[in-house]
Length: 183
Image (cartoon, rainbow, N blue to C red; front, side, top):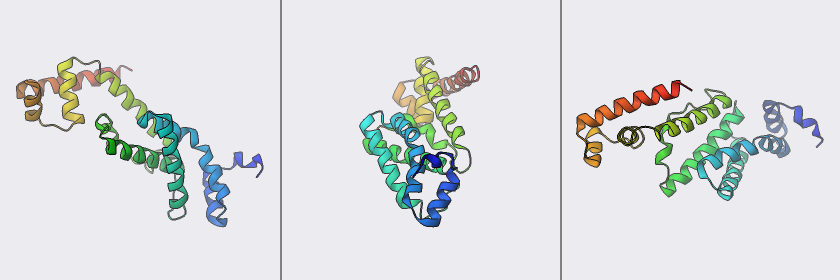
């Protein structure tokens, strides 16, 4: 194929693939998202080989799933597949505790890919700001929001009273909000 395909919209490539079944159209489409998907996988897996393997798995899933379902936002769909694949791998390794806020992200069909990437940046900033809190606030906020522990469980773990735990969470949450709004 010539380089004329560079100006073809994602939706048109999908339509052409659906019309004639030529996997070259899908290949062009997936090639466009290779670096983005690699970046997403690196963010989660933190190893180049694992990220490359994950991107390949995303492509294999795309090849098998795209013909079966109507997909309106291919970029968002690929992003979500990559994210879910990486989180699944991390769950298998039990290394996902610090990724809990990601479960609250909107589905890609609801928002453009650019907003999903912006959410990722916000989460990274939130993690960085969490690390700057006073230790007692950081420990209590992380245990409550990320580990989903109750006040009583946190009190038992830290030695703080339940009243202190509530106070540290409230103050930590307020301080995080102030820090996030100041950026």
